[in-house]
Amino acid sequence: MAEQDIKPDAGISKGLRQLKVGYTSIRHADSRDMTTYYSQCPSIVLKGNWLSEAGFESDTPVDVRVTPGHLLLSVREPAPELPAEPEVVTMLKRACKKLSARKQQQIAEFIQAIATPQKRPRKIPDGVIEWRPLLDN
Image (cartoon, rainbow, N blue to C red):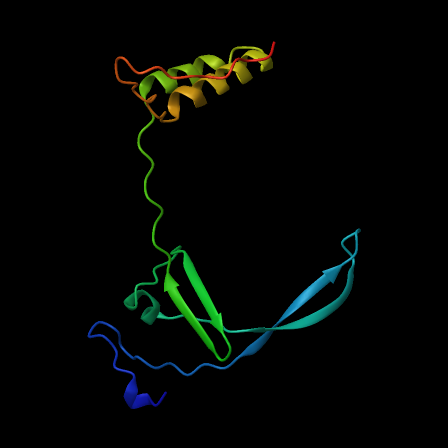
């Protein structure tokens, strides 16, 4: 891609950056934390105000798509917020901490059962007979 092909957005100071792949030393240690050897690993350092101009603020989760000869960095979309927990579930969890491990497990299963949306049973019209197999006891 030629430099003239890169047109930065109005808020980004420079659309094309030229960097160089360097290396990082990696320390390898034995079980007693004694250094056994060092190895080199390729690395690229990205830093500068242009990152925030491009939407990469500090602590922003980033996805890296890797294809031969290309790295594509994109801001990860935030996970959807979970709905607030009903107050009754919060109260049950709080009360559960004072009980034995077995009771805590039973209450946790109960909470899971009431917190999970359930399908409504199929409505059988009046006058229709539904045959069900007998259970072997």
